[in-house]
Length: 583
Image (cartoon, rainbow, N blue to C red; front, side, top):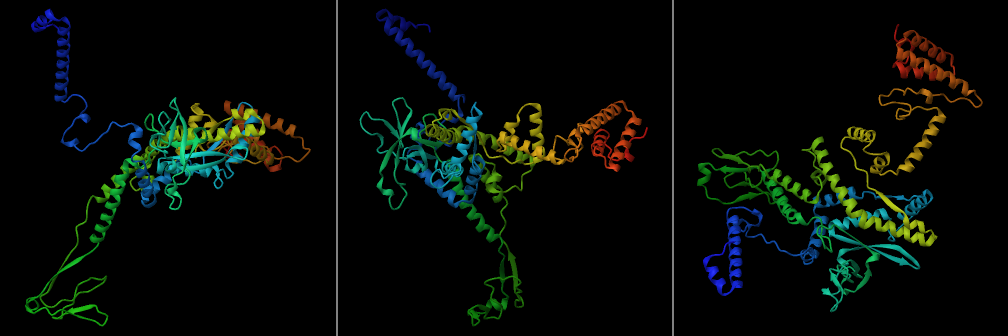
């Protein structure tokens, strides 16, 4: 910036004052440029203050500062909606069913097959037991996830039984996580935020848990807490901001909207009742209008029957009622006008509630009247992405992996097998059903053929442990071959079109004990070679001869007759000698 004449005069007396004047003037010019930019509607429109944003209060608080004052109210209101609002109750059930279903299964992983099988059996025995004194671990998963969705967070606390560490699991709602006193216990003490105690390095050191639920009408008033070290606690919640100590109910963004929709539903129901009513405007004759009104006559039961002039009293209409008036009387019917868009508006608002929860609206409402395959498929694809995020980034690392590691460490001590502590787990989420199984299965097969996915991954998506599956399949195939059976679902023998696979050596009849199977096998193999060469060369004579040989074997009951007939059917597509191609 060039110095002005006044700056130069000041500089003669004090060069420092001259530089200061130039700096201040440069700041003023920059501020003026920024003001002009904002006045010219450049920058962020969302940050402008205007009449439309007058009621928008956005504070600069940290995650804990925003959550702490309102968490108890949010939790109570969320649970109330989950108990009494049918749409919220449905959404919560669907989320739990899709996230954990009947329980995620662990697949033990270790380089030593013996240790892997031992760890797998240890986990299965533990998971199927009453891990919390009442539920097995699969039931605990559903309860914990539901508590996180409705209440924001849940604690999985581990305690010893006798000399056995981590022997008992206890689920504790976030209501019982409370600071003994706000902020710091004593001067220079640890930092405690909503019951979560932090160490000097910023890591979680302990949790302060009330011994009784504060909502218990008998013992909740005691407010006695205990300090539990963080290594004994698994804290499950969805973290959305750095430094966040507690979770909030998943319904928070749409809680007010759901409450308003309840009032709207009542108003729509009342309006529908009125729309179904029909009214009558009755115009009296001139003679009846001139007569004084002396009331109506009543029958012995107290119901009004007719007026003093003899015309019927019409205080209420009944189905099938026929009204006869006096000469000169007229009756005009009217009905309330139906509304045209309340249903559409209500449906759209429900969609916004479902969107805030990350769930397809048809799962929450059960309404698929406006859905088709493409829309259902698109909704499920997006929903599956969210399920992957919740499962892989929240439920597995904060609830399931810690539980598996604790069980392995405990058994490593009890069995004196330290390698058990090295075992990790791969978790299998509940299988996800398909909109169109035929199309989706075909797509899965193409993925495996192209090498994008292997068989263990595909089986894991269906909740199947691949090693056990293959071992069981091998046992079944051995038994099928022993009995000489052929099934349409056996890809070793039947191709995708339902025809026999070209290598027909599988299709051999069961022979009596002591039979010379080797000679029959060589004869069938030689027959297969001749027929294959004939088909490739287009030798109709040899093919016809093969048909005759196969038909003769079937008629005479030869042991190799069925195998030769199967070879002819697989190579030519014909199953009878009279259907063979003519030369």
